Image (cartoon, each protein chain N blue to C red):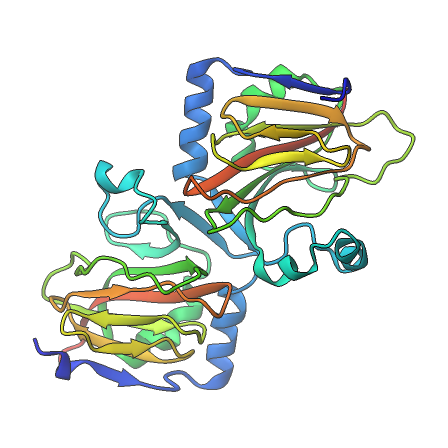
Length: 174
Length: 180
């Protein structure tokens, strides 16, 4: 898949629905897991200070029973994306750094499906693809591409946190 | 070191400690706090301490295990139970942990007391989960480095403060406020 096939939609959700999601996820009541490793869970990176790790919140993951109490607020998003089967919905929080730090390129590990990244806050971080093209983190922006397009996320320098939502799903056939 | 600051290394049995450390690093659910210690009514005090510029640059994550209003918070509490059992408090006031992600510099947070209970014999215990270059400091100048499985116990009315770390991915401490 070519990077040119990446679909970017600004103002993806109506303002009220976006505000609900942003308010919940940026609040001090939203719960996060701390991960010492950002992408590849190996001993090599576990103690590598160049990988700062990140905070994650899994709304739903195929094969795991636990479902986040907050998943229902994402329904308008699933509907608009045309989600037929959801493999995983997971939020990532990266913390501010002095300079932008890029994670490793990766795919999310699910096959024959779509990957979407939804930006919860605006900051100077971005999503980068292997050809060097970037999508800036702009609140309420949705970026979608086929599962095998390798990508990487960054930290940010101008907000305390960078928060994104990652979705891996099969689309309704039209 | 002031005589009223007690430092106990290897506080928990190694197996209990490693279990606890694993839980904090892998399974604990944290809440984001954009301004640790910097309560609105304490900002003036923070500026007096010369730490004003850090207010906008700091953050941490917290997890509660016991509060005076809620009492025990399950299932979190079971993960700190060995610590509380050994501390054996007469009355628990609060049990809370802080996770401070690695920063490029050490940020010294402002001095504070956790529970404003003057003239009462409350104690504060700071239990270190992480070995790193962060530390706990006291108003009289004493500094206690972060060493894993190290317990620091002091008079709850002593002003103290924590820091960030530059050489570990995250600094984790457990704070216990109690009557002995």
